[in-house]
Length: 276
Image (cartoon, rainbow, N blue to C red):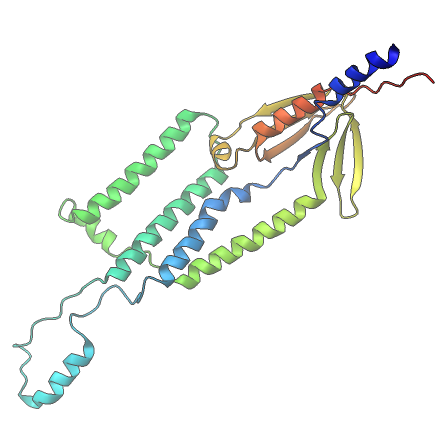
């Protein structure tokens, strides 16, 4: 009789044990530069296949044709009859300039994310509003040069053009930094188990254990940008009999991690032994 009652209880208690452990990793904020990282690769590929990216100011007509015509006519050519050379801007340079402005805008926005915290949606909306006004004013003055000639003259000298080597080198530097970051976090991470909290740290995998009895977990979204880019936030752990709380900043997918920890600590594992 005792065997029959013990079997369903053990099966029900084992059903929620689908999560054995939850790993928590605190990444540095440099990982938030992944939009600039991807845009550098895309800009490099687009610039590589965009064609000739010579200086923006050129001369009408191919130089070879002008040289042959002057050689044929000799000294009889008159400079007044030849039309004045007009500065032109090639399509490839316009595309390169557009990529340069876009890359600098995204990179500047990423730096703002690293420098400041935006805990509320209102501050995020204000930042996007300022950024949109600046980009709109830049496009307005470029499409309507007679609106404010003084500002237009200044913008004509600003031509952020970069070749493919610049974008690929920028991409390679960030790629190397990301690889070093992912290697470094392998030696410093936390593991939550049903009965204990483990801190793996050090090159030789040093281990420190904390009991999960009465463990309190708090989640904080300190930056709206961080949550939008990586779904990351701050996770605060309060182990029992510990004076200081464990603060983990920039934990990716923090919402899913919190649900897994809640499910893991809320599942009670009971092992029933029958008497011989």
